[in-house]
Length: 115
Ligand code: FES
Image 1 (cartoon, rainbow, N blue to C red):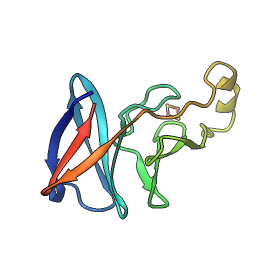
Image 2 (image 1 turned 30 degrees about the horizontal axis):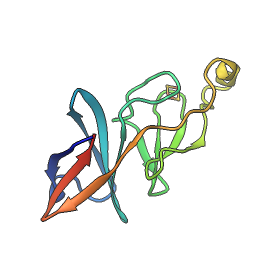
Image 3 (image 1 turned 135 degrees about the horizontal axis):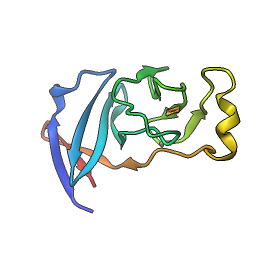
């Protein structure tokens, strides 16, 4: 694992996120009220990109496809795929799975992600 500078602190306003490719891994970096966090960029359900997902309740991202929600601080599933009704039938092959997360540090206004 190595630390990579992805952007400056001011490049991502609070409450927003931005995609980056670091060491060939696609990640999303989020700026929450309590700091910066990073996760894999694709949903663990059916790999839909989360970059257009809404940030909900200040710390979760909601997948635009089937509305799974993840806590971006830990990657944990807050709510699994639930839209449209019936999508839960897929759960026996696509069970709940957390997002991979990456440590983020802030140094002199620079955002560094360990990948
Ligand atoms: S692909 Fe994200 S919830 Fe299905």
